[in-house]
Length: 82
Image (cartoon, rainbow, N blue to C red; front, side, top):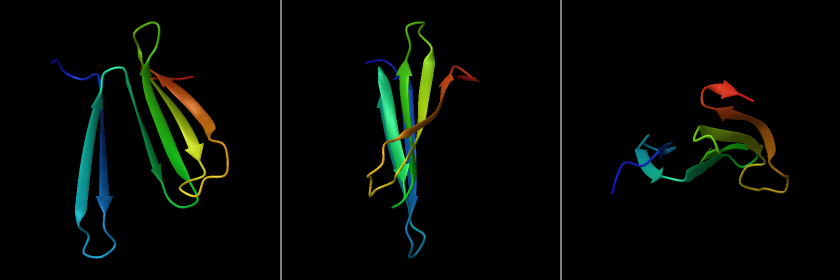
């Protein structure tokens, strides 16, 4: 099994004691993550386009309580925003 094309890391800090936790994930065809508070958040979806470029679609979300549609902020293709 080879190396994954996409990687993600998440770090959390507890309110009491400041204990840090970490989780990592990997994916070959794509990857996504949603970091959120109760009322707002951000979601990133990574994928490979038809020209074999790494792309990341970025969305603003309504957070954990939901209720609103995600709003796209932009797409990062390689190192350029579209």
